[in-house]
Image 1 (tube, rainbow, N blue to C red):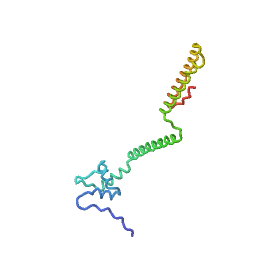
Image 2: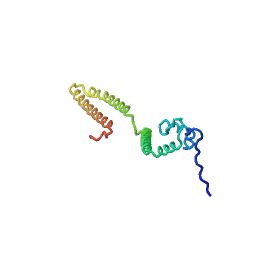
Image 3: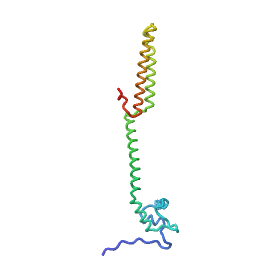
Image 4: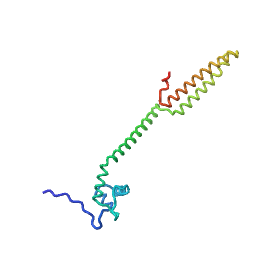
Length: 168
């Protein structure tokens, strides 16, 4: 005849069980029991001990609590998404597909400034006639203004996540 499983022994003496006894009974650590007491999941008796049956029921209800599970899984999903995005950004940067926007803007401004300075000498180097010089310089200035406006539009488009060549 098979023997029956042993019944859990109730602690002797004062009613209730210690946190260590609850931990052993629920197969969790004593600090975890203390955390449950602190969170109000386990209610201590007036003697500061814990009711074994009440703690077991409270623990089972805590394990079955769908709102706790769903909020934990939502938080875990957000953390996982953030980690995936960080890995994607790091990989893109390592492959040279991701650029620092401010450094790129500074480099473009520097190159365009140098180009404009170089073009400033074209009109004086082309002729001594002041009227022709003025006409050449005006053409250069107009072209530079159109380029500056185009760079500004491209910068705004890129800042807003749009294709800078959509307006072409």
